[in-house]
Image (cartoon, rainbow, N blue to C red):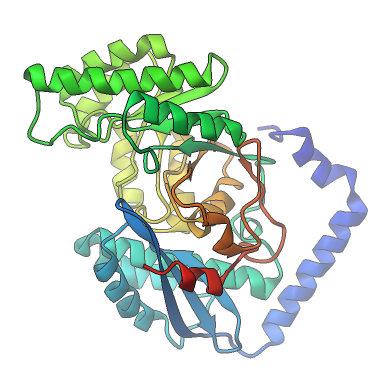
Length: 405
């Protein structure tokens, strides 16, 4: 396989002096790390930031025995349960080397597989912190620890679903226009979220379907023909109505149609994937390599969407992406996340040869940019990753405490 871009080739071949210096710096940092006293996990801090009715953001920070800190995202579980699990799993890390990531995963995975989303989110957030700390200790961005950057740009789509009020065609269109004005060329919404779970057919479902299609049409009109429209169905349909929905979306030229039916039985998603005339995507709630192996084997979707909070962490997402690559599938990590979660996911995306696009939760709070230092840098919808060690960001404590839930 050739290099994915001229930029990547230039980085390796065109500047031997710079590469030699970077290699020397890397070797020096390794020698320093080897000579230094063992760095162990010492303490845990959490910050719960108010967002909206769809949930808060939970920032996690680990501190080492020599004062190095690392950050992670534990958002979108049950807050109280997640905080309990964070303290529980921190005890598995306390006093251990910050480099023992695989050992930590092997100890915590048997627990979280049985304990549900709050447990998975908590365990994953602590792993995010460890990668950030390791990058800082070694003087390298996390993407270099994960294999090295192959993606010169991290394209993001604006998820406007969590921020749109009122949830009408006009409301979605107005938020979509804000995203376009901010430079995004791809927008996602979930216009069927108002369907009650006990509504599975008949005139009531048809009415909700027409409303959702009208919202999507309004956003398409804002985007025009040259920007991308993504639709998340959040598993509100059965197979029969899901196939009909896919047909009705054909005129809108979707970038993808996401999770039309529940994940079980997988045969339903696989049939929609075969028959839909647009790409399908999904997998945001699937946990671990084992779960995704079956999901990919059954050809449930064209585009795999692991979430670094729900899949088991950054390293697990890296492994899931490798399975998808072997199956010829692209990867678009799910995550209407905090700015910390977005940064962590972007470092994974940067090393994936089969990366497609990353989710960005647009417009949820006006103070998003204040919560990390330095603030997120987006250029025409592309997240700019720092070459600073670790994730290259820190929690702005003053802002996090000011906007505490």
